[in-house]
Amino acid sequence: MPEECKVETALEILVGKWKPIILYQLFSQGTMRFSELQKSLPDITKKMLTSQLRELEYHDIVHREIYLQIPPKVEYSITEYGMRMAPLLQAMNEWGMSHIEHLNELYGEKNKSNNL
Image (cartoon, rainbow, N blue to C red):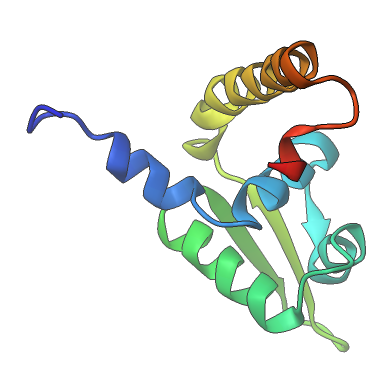
């Protein structure tokens, strides 16, 4: 790829099993507390969720709001900058759905993309 191609930079933010799912939750549900995110992703560990949220926060995709109260309350939301990712994620979702349809046409219903 040409030197000016920055696909790798974009993928750095999205790569991983959990980041796209976390982003999907925040885009569809809006602001969420840590515990709400954890409940919406039952297979993720607390450590992994924390790590992925910190990376997204570092890239200014996710905002972390801490409320100084007892017990402490922390909420996560998509930043204004992160909202610019919405068309990209929507396009990826649409392509993923059409890819599954394509694979079903090629191989039939029993051979979905996760069976490859």
